[in-house]
Image (cartoon, rainbow, N blue to C red; front, top):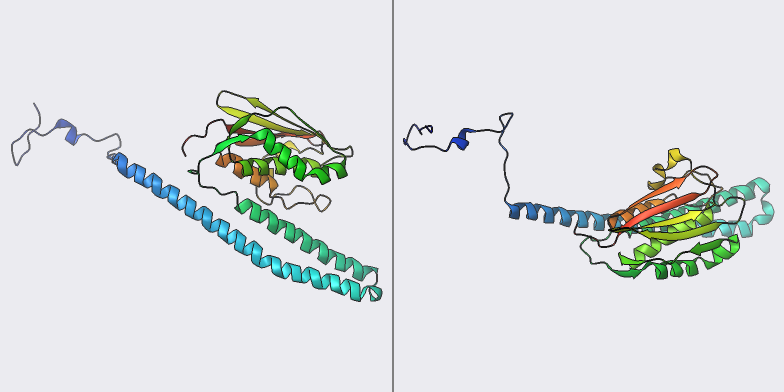
Length: 274
């Protein structure tokens, strides 16, 4: 017999007195409330991304002017007082110029990194990845000639992506391969393999390689494995990681020290809702 409600005498539902294990009750939220919460999170994420983008732009822009001033006056001192400086003085002047140039590159890369924040609800378009690669190769033509690099690539498939971001991705990976080259001229090959739901791209080089213990940390912002002998700010691979993950893919490296490197990244053929 069902338990009676002592005050009214009516039968009370047996489930009303049951509790889940542990004695706590699970609170159910209406589907509409859950969707509102997700929408609020998306709005906050978009606002935070926009705030960071504006902050990074302001910092980079405001710091560039004093950097230019330092560089200009240092070069002016070098011209006017060159005959009065000994070798140590000229060396110190060059340290200042080099430091200013490194900071300028760092601010440039910070701007590029901040611009990779995109609204996940923005529609993606059909992109010819081969055309994106060709455009990047044209942009890097001078560096390719200077280094004597040999670059080959297979036919690349089309996919739904962001043309500017895909181009930036190729540019960063190719620039990396051209920069971290060994004694021999760079040899770089780009290819892609289509799966059921995604496409895996690969950029393979014959450069100095990367020790397996560093495979994870190189994708962090401002992570540099080498000193001044190799230029860069340590943010290029962080840009790649952000672009790939924003489009629902992943990126990794296969390499060993002195044996070149192969960077692989996947991108979905059809990007689902975030």
